[in-house]
Length: 302
Ligand code: SF4
Ligand code: SF4
Image (cartoon, rainbow, N blue to C red; front, side, top):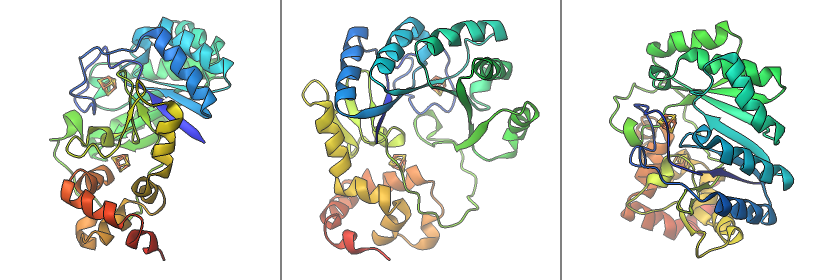
């Protein structure tokens, strides 16, 4: 199933201390509305069945979003909007704005929430947005970004107290969070496989990874190409047939790191995107893994 994170614009109305897109914000790059519609039509022809409209803040261009969601619905594409809820200042306002999107076919809203977001957006906004979604039968969930420290306990307690549907999301130590102090990890030796949904930027650059991987600037390992010179199908096929990407999806980062010579007790010290960066954003390491990708690494199975 082909899915994609659609970066219509880099513009955001707040500035979170942990934002991955640090060098892009407050830069205001944006696609043209007509261009975005054409791309969505091409995506539908290429078999894309899910689009997530993501950072910057999609509600900054609400009128455009209403149109784009309508185009997606016409093509049978499942849609999600990722938002910081800054617009949900009251329950009434939340219902008024969300219902515009709902009427055009929006399938799900993902509400970003963390102690960094909530320095600028009252957490009651997230509650307003969630309650408004519930009231109109729109699927929602809260994405609770956390570094798993005690500082996040009151934020989690608020979600539980209000019985909101939420999922903890590990903080990604990239962008503005690159220099944050890390807590020690206390976890098992995990496979760390990634589904790797592609990300499309406002400049029409497409990447195979929609998180930290689009910032691996030394090797540009996850860069697929630009839609000005390649078709949507070509870039999806590139992502789906790339041997190393497929090893990340099936074997996982942990096993690849072990294959590459990392000690087991070293591997568990890293978050998965950090480990991914060490493996694939180093020209030397990437050259070795690329060489092994269709041979030795393919046989590295249990
Ligand atoms: S709301 Fe999202 S895009 Fe905007 S600054 Fe915060 S993390 Fe970045
Ligand atoms: S582990 Fe690698 S592929 Fe997965 S999200 Fe992180 S950077 Fe992207």
